[in-house]
Length: 338
Image (cartoon, rainbow, N blue to C red):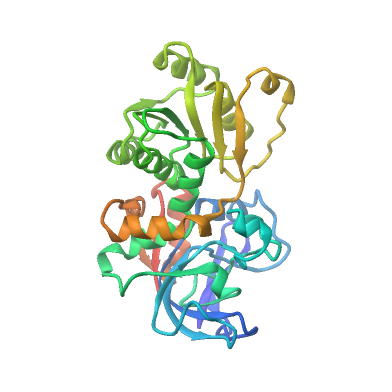
């Protein structure tokens, strides 16, 4: 088969690779219905996150099971499934407490920007759909694999409650789906910090009530203006820079919560001012597996359309253009069709 490999900064190639095979009894092989480019893929693509050797890419996936190892019991050939970007056994103490992204046997998925994928620990990682999905919801089911699950975790970690005021820092796919998640959790007011008109429109469609274009201290001041000088109950940090994290913390009221899911880069926080903010901080890699059944049901029942974040659809062999479009901010998120 041919699959995606990153060789260095902005050097994405679609090249011949070995077909994946069952390596352990707990493996499954999937024929992918769709995959995509993630905003976090842009860190190594831009050379900010270094790679030591050519690296197969991709960690978001959904598709049909083709083969399973002898120990796999919960999924079967012919079944349509979605899996998390975190591979977990779903049986260790951390998994049982709902933190599959901290599994004692944790692996991170890669190699998903390909037509066929091996999934280790299939029983603990994959969740099936009620039936074969229609083509119309494939993109939304794919979003569940990471960006919707991550946006949902950001809102959950930020303790979004019915009637709350939530702020979303970041207007990428995760931030936009953080807006959708906060809306579904009952937030009454949802403020997104965004400077991009196209993304602002989608944020409003997902439930944003206010747009803030300012950044830094001005952005915090604007949030305070919109919240009667108090700050937000819940803030979702979906970028991963020091500036975005400081902005999130400073925008939160005392006793409020920050859910942070932006992959951190170049972040060195001074704890002293945080100490006096009296805010709850919770986040990290999203335990998407915890939420998969609930989010699949929301999509299946037509109550959520997270697939709207995919504004560029390309055949998988044009994956390099998908990266370029996101790198140049011509696209929010690229869906790839094998």
